[in-house]
Image (tube, rainbow, N blue to C red; front, side, top):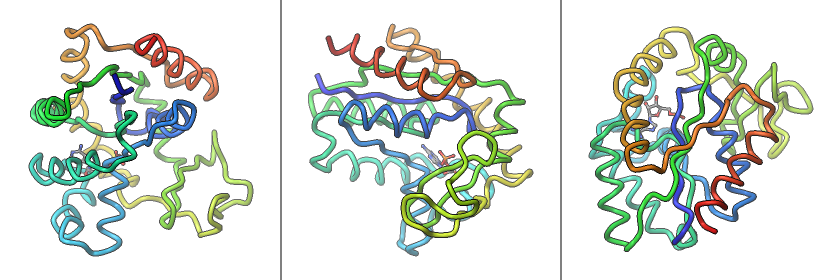
Amino acid sequence: MPANLVFLGPPGSGKGTYAARAAERLGVPTISTGEILRQAIRAGTPLGKEAQGFVENGKLVPDDVMGRALGERLAQPDCAPGFILDGYPRTLPQAELLDRALERRGTRVSLAVLVEATEALVLRRLGGRRTCPSCGAVYNIHTLPSKVEGVCDRCGAKTVIRDDDRPEPIKQRLRVNAEQSAPLAALYRDRGILRTVDGSAPLEDVVARIVMLANEVHA
Ligand code: AMP
């Protein structure tokens, strides 16, 4: 079965960074729904126009809008060996939608990785986060700085603070996570496919554990 991984955890838990590193090691693409939306907003596409107000205020984009965008991405040929989903599902209906989409392809979610992080860690991470608006690379001034301050290592663009990494949207995103996204862990735990990792551990240790967990499932 393909390595179909979903990553759960609050915003700022580090899950996007872990997902990208683990995906590289596993040879599968990372699909960040937040990044898909940010790109669409920048490009001014119909999806971007529908999503903009929600994203800027730290609210969830409606399930049907998100579902369509995800379905298109999952249909790309690079997802055949599997994928890591970063930021999806975020609600129980999204999880059902994903199950159905994968069922149609004769496959299913093979592993759910829950990145655990305290609120203090999350607030520190989000406050220090810098992102590249051009290529989507993510840095942190405390834990993962770019080589030259304010400049993306990968593409040389000027890094920025995401609009939703400001205090009010952060509070809203944490509320949304507690109310809508936290129940997802129970869903995958009941299926016996949930594993937890410590979001405060050193980056390479966390990535190594995720790769080990994925290889165990697919041994
Ligand atoms: P992220 O980059 O994962 O923190 O996502 C940034 C923002 O994009 C979120 O606060 C939501 O507004 C939106 N978003 C990302 N993924 C989803 C999703 N699965 N469902 C609804 N909204 C999403």
